[in-house]
Image (cartoon, rainbow, N blue to C red; front, top):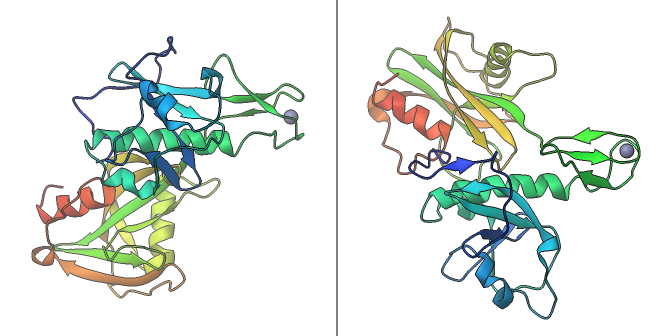
Length: 275
Ligand SMILES: [Zn+2]
C-alpha cells in the first residue's frame, strides 16, 4: 500500500533542524504539485533556479516531517515557478514509489494549512502552535488540528464470491468495495452495517477487521473489514452512490497491477484466499 515504504523511515515526531541541501521542498496549489520535468521532486539546493523574479527566504517554508533523515517542507506562499504543474493523482505512479507517500502526506498538511488561515470561531488569523501540530487563535484560543476523517471499506463475501462495486463518481474503470464515512455517534461496526444496507441492501455478519490505511487525498483514515453475507444475496442498488454492484467468483478475479490502495490489497487477498 502507498504507506508501506520500508526500508524508508517516516518520522513525523522529529524536531526541525536547520535546513540543508537534500531536504525536500514541495510547492502545491489546488489539486496540483510542481515537479521537475523528469518528475523528480525539488530539494533545497534547487530553490534559486525554480523561483522566478521573486525573493525567497526560509520564512516561506513550513516544516512537515522527516523521511530518511531528510526534512520535508511545504511552501505557504504562491510564487512564479519554473517547472511543471501536475495533478496530485501523479503521486500514485511516481517513482521511486515511497515519494508518493511523502508527497501525499505533505499535500494533506498543505491543504490543512491552506484551509485554516483564519479562526472558524471568531475570524482572527490563526498561528501555528509551538507545542504541537495545531493552529491556535490568539484572540479566542480556538485550536484546530489536522483533519482526519474515519471511513470504512468492506469486502462482503459469500463462500467463493465477493461483492465488487463501482462508484458513480469513479474516474477509473476499476471495481471497488463498499465504502463510506463514519457518521457522528457511530461505531466503526455500525458504519459498516449501515453503509452495506444503504448501498446494496444486504445484511452481513461475522465482521473481521483487516488493516487500516491513511488516504490523504481525502484526509481519510480507512479501516478495512471482511464480512460474510447474512441471508439473501439480492442487491438493491443505491443509484446515487453506485453505478454497479456485482458478485464475482474468486476464479474471475484478475491480479491487480497496482496494490497501493487498501481496496486493491483486500480484493487481491480474497483472490489468493489469504484472509
Ligand atoms: Zn478565534
